[in-house]
Length: 400
Image (cartoon, rainbow, N blue to C red; front, side, top):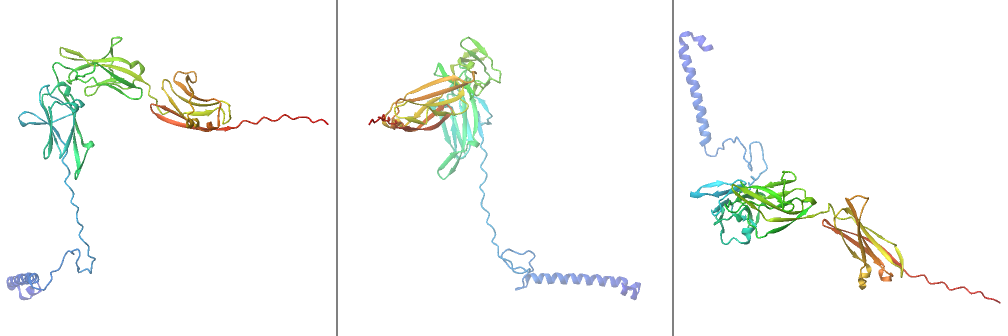
């Protein structure tokens, strides 16, 4: 700008052009230097980013091996259970499906490999109607000429294999309950006319009144006196896949019961269930042992008592171990049951071991074991046998 002012306004355009040319020349020169820097042999380019294991312009750096990434196997495909329909169509199954009795059931389960679980009726004898085939990526279960008796739960288990060792992955199993509606059979057939069922006081009881159609209505009945038993959903409930459940069995539930199913104009009765009530204890017994004496003189009698206080109508079994067993001394016991505290909910069970005319061999440890349906517990006591005291000789008076 100073030169422009010195030469006057008429030289201004010329000077401006010269300044622009100078700038262009300088830029071209810089670009050429940069190109020569990249192409000149023996000249190392400036490194913007240091590389591991090499020296950088910031000084030496310890060589660091690049970590090797462990190959992560691809996540296994999620187990999928589908029903194969006509014309190659597939349908993903839900909790239950229905296949008309006489039709073919075909299930496909994705997995490499898989195992199948079927109702026990088919496991025992399928008459060649059941076929299971494992393909490369899925397994196929096919059941032909189906009947109402095939009704039940079908399960696909993916297998986890290491070399030749395979095990079921139970947490990934897929289950489907398959109904085979039969126009002539509302209940799954049974070979037993009567079935004995144990009513455990501490466990729900299931009457497997299994129907072949999910649309059938089921009621519960008592044989004598003939009356319908209320299924209220709380004390007694019905599940189309399980049957009748008595959630908290009581003595009045015992007896002969059966189910009745109705569908349309068809009404049928199930197998009769003979329910037997068993009062299961809440816990194993807690016996207490006591001997009539901790020290017994030879020839005297000994009694060792073992007692248990527990719930009413809960049976307790006593067994004994005693020193006289070693020589074959026979076991004599007296057992009894009596109410406790005047109430009807507790009782005392007792076993008394009798040892007549104790001998030296009866000295030692006496062990009582009390057992009920929940378990057993043992208690012991020790008895010492002492010899008889020798009679004293009578003193005689000497006279002079």
